[in-house]
Length: 458
Ligand SMILES: Cc1cc2nc3c(=O)[nH]c(=O)nc-3n(C[C@H](O)[C@H](O)[C@H](O)COP(=O)(O)OP(=O)(O)OC[C@H]3O[C@@H](n4cnc5c(N)ncnc54)[C@H](O)[C@@H]3O)c2cc1C
Image (cartoon, rainbow, N blue to C red; front, side, top):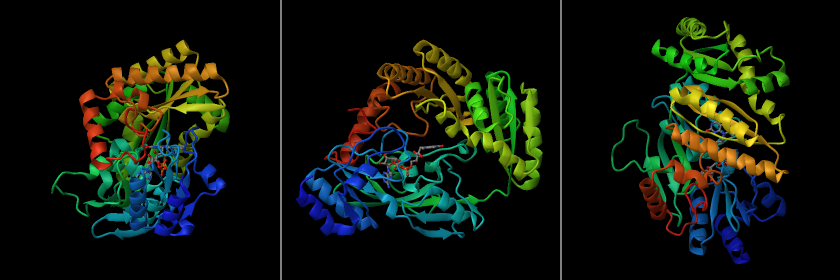
């Protein structure tokens, strides 16, 4: 990048907020995937005005800008593109307001999601979105990916909690969208366009989120199902009984074996599926509901149901779920984590297709996910040093995406399109809708500087 532009950036937002140090360029080259591209410069804005100044310069000079939260993304969306400015939002990390009167919070985008959760919980409030990366990821990154998590069946995803956004567009224009009210139908709801837009339309610099009262208690049951299809049916049966579970987490037999080998928790490894179900609410209600849930799990075909009677026992059951990522990481040198979603009733067919795809391509696939919302994370075990394996893994990934769409599902439930799924997006989205999306992109970012090469097809 021309040194004049670096100087311009330093003059605009302060020299200590602009770095071209080789160690910074290397450190900011990644996200949660294995992709790697160094930016030409890393900038660390601390105010909306700083972001506007950077985007003004970038737009005039036609320099690509890649916003970045904590870079835990699993689609390559925060990986810089060649010649780009990495816009690191981590220093905009203040919680600006928590209002018990209006049950909302206002945060800068670099606030770590867990920090927001804990801050509101101190006041008896609850911010439900809970991606498994909650200790690392940012609220801004969650908005830009419309992050989900295990609690979505009951509480929805990040976008369901966003009341207002401040957004800076290419060129430095600032938009104030939405506000502090739950109802708001004045004008078009532009803020929804930015939720899940993966930094391709603008930069989120302030977020107002809705909060709810914190549920007082939570209890968990863990059930072993000889037949995976029965575990899926059990979730439907629980809902039909009038209980909306907090989480319904599925682990297939390969995932269970991996966790058991890693943690030795005494999990049954001779069943097709483990199902973790949690309920939350008032203490009395939770005690009643967990009994109903355990009963339904048994009647739906579970062989072994462990029912927590206290918060401590619940925690012990959660250990299995929490250990999935590190347990799978021990199975192969690399893993390709997918994120398909299908209608809940189609999960057994989807899992059967995954086994076929795994065998046909000779690529081991382990499956776990949030089955209440049909969101599965088939994880392909591979080794990046082996070109033939990677080719087969890419083919298997393409096939499983196609299978999800064929079953009425979608390419991604929560991780986003980023770079990884760009080549498949035409399979998953209507051509007319894609043309309108390209029009939206051109409207907000006419010079195409915002995170180019991500989200939409080339
Ligand atoms: C172990 C692990 C578990 C995970 N579990 C889940 C899960 O349960 N559910 C889930 O949904 N995801 C999950 N993820 C994926 C990831 O954590 C989420 O996508 C998260 O929302 C990304 O937040 P981040 O701050 O790391 O954003 P980044 O990865 O830095 O960025 C993600 C995208 O958002 C854009 N962006 C970031 N900040 C802004 C901003 N202020 N304005 C505009 N665009 C911005 C970036 O350009 C990029 O396109 C997991 C990841 C890991 C590593």
